[in-house]
Length: 527
Ligand code: ADP
Ligand code: ZN
Image 1 (cartoon, helix red, strand yellow):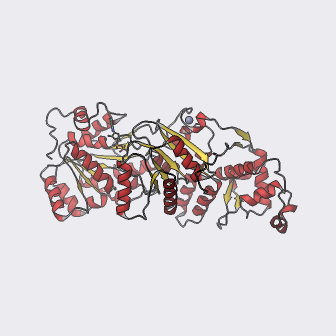
Image 2 (cartoon, rainbow, N blue to C red):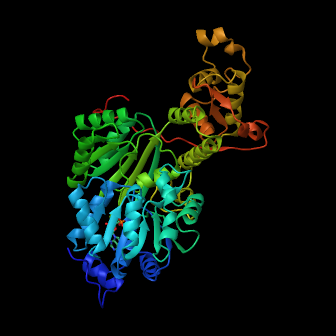
Image 3 (cartoon, rainbow, N blue to C red):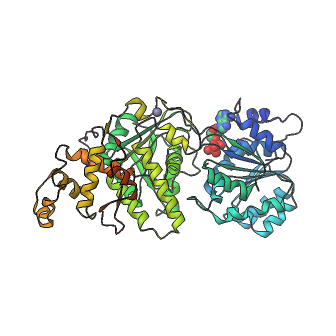
């Protein structure tokens, strides 16, 4: 293809209609495009599916020269380039998978000014011969996609992203646009500093995904709950089920498959061919469910994913937001569904306690988990805590989350919390939830007798509540940070610093009453 002829009447609107087939810009796309067309730098924060690509594709077409798109994802580049070519845009990829001849062709097209857009991975771009070649070309812009990869604190840190700072010195006249769907204050500052040298305008779109219905429930029998959810609400729909481990993605996929659903695993342990085959089926067929670790999803643009389910807790609100954000990109209603349990919290806290990461990193991870748990246990509308992560105020009462649709009951659990905390203390801060609850309930067993726990002042002080309620109390105390698992990793519970005001009677605590767990289905096996 020859480059798009933009002589004369190529306004952004005309290109939007002619090349992409849309009749109006969304959100702040128009402003962003104008900024870059004028040669200024821009930082674009927009949720997944918000329409970031057009923000650099159209300026690259309007400005003369080639737009260089830097992205860490080969799969994403290939898909985008195919889509662009199909629409008559002269786009190409420059990466290590090209053979010598194909590479020479791309380089020739670039030098001859025959490319509108060139996609390249950061490590490919940063090679000296490539930089030198680009210096001899006319460039429209640099678009740095997934710009949060520059953040050393993030999960996707890529060292090459830091080096992209050199674009400023080597190509001072070429505007840079950095784009990301991750936007906490710190990451934003890092992107600005490293990639834009603090220059340029920042554009923040609303991060509210209005069509997503957020739901967080308690795990009772995770598989059965998942199956029921899919069978009742998403028969024949495409969806993604996120699991913690590779093994679990396989087990869950097999379980769903046995129950008549088209489910496939996806994780880094599969061969590249298998992963590609599963991804192609997910994108090409209707009603395919992918059971994946976090390896799946970045850069996959499937508009009609109707649900994203979490069978295990994500790492942070940010990860949860990104992963659930893969549902409903077409703007139609979609579900973000999650179940979790006390055991999940203990497991993650323990892994964090055993981490060998630097202390600052560990603290950040603890804070991230706490924010996520607070979100899970939140009794009000889900949107304010979710969006506050992006420094966005949401008025609440969205009417489309579980808590808005079925407001949970809360109760004054101050007394119960004090009993539970002192029981943890009296039993020596070594025992798990099951044992602590036995002591609270006054269940005399040989084990309790041999430990002398039937003689403790807390033995039987909790007999006014039942076992399920105590589980709920302990889980929420753990989620709120009043309790913590013992660092040795034996599953024991300990008091944390934060519970002191509660123990001293200086603080009240409201907990949510757990709703009755989902009834088991006949078809489902046990966990
Ligand atoms: P992001 O990179 O922000 O996740 P994309 O650029 O892939 O999002 O866009 C998401 C979807 O929205 C794509 O299918 C894209 O074609 C569509 N889209 C983008 N801008 C518009 C628009 N102005 N009007 C209609 N659809 C749009
Ligand atoms: Zn709500």
